[in-house]
Picture (cartoon, rainbow, N blue to C red):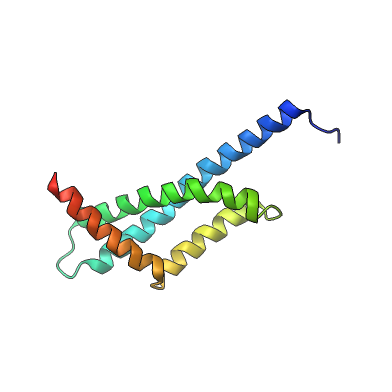
Length: 124
C-alpha cells in the first residue's frame, strides 16, 4: 500500500472527523432523548401529560447531541484507536443509557438541568 500524500492524508482525517462528529451527534441525541424521556416520566408525581414527556425527550436530545458531537470524535481519535468505530459508538450509547436507567449520577444531573430548563422555558 502506497503512502498517502500530505494533502490526501489531511483530507482523509477531516472526512473521518466529520463522520465521527455527525455519528456522535446522532447517537448521542438518540441516547439523550431516551434518558430525557425516562427522567421526565420518573419526575412526574402528578398525572403525566404528553407535553412534559416530550419536553424531557427534547431536552435530552439537545444535550445528548451536543455531548456526542464533542466527545465521540475525541474518544475515537484519542482513546479507542484500535476499536471498530461502530462497536465504540454502540458501546458508549448503551453504557450511557444503561447507567442513567440504573439511576446513576447522570440522571441526577439531568433531573436538575431538566427542571431548570422547564422553568426557563415556561417564562416565555
